[in-house]
Amino acid sequence: MPRQHISGGSSFEDQIGYCRAVVLEDGWIHVSGTTGYDYATGEISPDVAQQAEQTLRNIDKALREAGSSMADAVRVRYILPDRDDFPTTWPVLKAWFGDVRPAATMIQAVLMKEEMKIEIEVTARKGSGKQ
Image: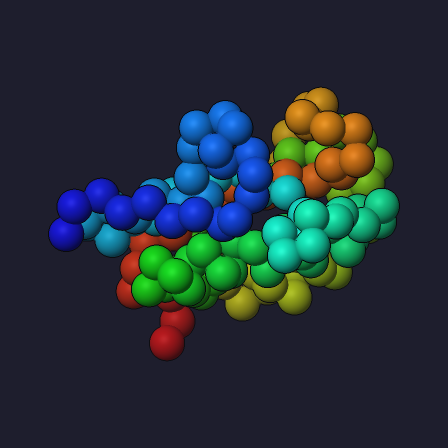
């Protein structure tokens, strides 16, 4: 299987020149940094926990389209402009990753737009999760 590109429906993908995820023939899936926009409406919540939830829904959708799931996540990176917001997201992150337990890093950095309060990047390997 050649390299497969998966679009998440974000307008940023065309504007910047990237895709939501890249699937490689050896089963690795690299999901781009993803934010909390609801791509069906273009809206983003002002609440960091709600943004985290929507972000993970967006990532889950990409992984499913790639024939995988969040259970296959092996690496996750959290990027937040305000490190003090990170604990607010923990219940959401634990709900999605509590049983998966991927390697993780949190980075504090300015994001592309002020309304973005969290960006999450995931690396997964098809078939590596609990079935």
